[in-house]
Image (tube, rainbow, N blue to C red; front, side, top):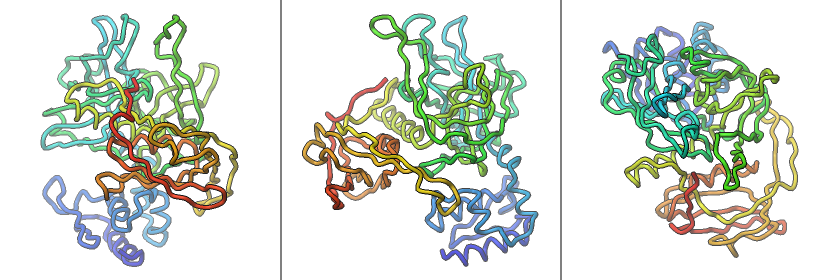
Length: 438
């Protein structure tokens, strides 16, 4: 659809603004309100999603959408797109989580609904691994007694067998990525709820100064929201999950994270970090030290959404609960030889570029990639013709993130700069090229 056509359709929607009429985007018709009136429940977010599909721009942010298509329309439409509206929408994608580890030990946290089928009463919830895992009782203990509460149904929260508690099954988890996937099946509470699924952002990067909000079960006091901004776009933190190394020393886990000024409390773990429009940009997993204010951390969507899909794929293949990521042993070692800002991009955000250089390649990649190759892009092809990923490598974490999408049998096409020339080389990975990472 041409942009002018999209703008014309949106202008018509803005003019009516009651949204009681169906709005069509090149045959994509939005219909069917809960009360049976076509289009009555259509809102600004539905229009945004349709525009992303029809224009082939999945990474179009909500703010960009508003600037491009609603500059000249009634202010009434923008009032529906306030930060408050986004927060309230995201509350319907949030859950409080309680995981009983032993008879006397329970963990409180948060979660995000990433898939829902209200007709069946099913939903998939993502949370942190450390919310459902503990070593305090001795050994690896993953909870088999987990319940979640939807927003507005938490009056009896902490009473694990209350009428508003929804049983959830842990189907997959990984300490290495601090992520866990819960499954709710056949819940009458879900069937009659107004819950919705959150959507991961399609953007690979977040930018300093971007307004975000954290929604979670802060201090185990039911779901609430805290607003802030992204204060650092990417860094690494180490976290103690209680594990020990073979010699008895503390085993620390290292995570790449976003830093946010949104206030994070105990109980926020596993909750969503959202930007305006309700896109899920991260999964909250840590807070700063007690003497550090304005320090909260979230696992970025770029890695977490791929780790979640890997866990789900492994669970579906194994048909049983899994406590590991089936991660590729690609054998490619990289380093960052240069890092700098390229200045402001078209949206006015300061971009960072890293020169990601191959230092060695073993296994299936041996002879295909060479020391000194500068990684430029990675394309993952499945089944001979399905392009699963096609990503420019502008930061080191882009490389590590996209490789989480590789499955056995995939062909991975690397575009590199070698001796000043652009070269494409392909590597096929098999079952022996994967390992289980807890």
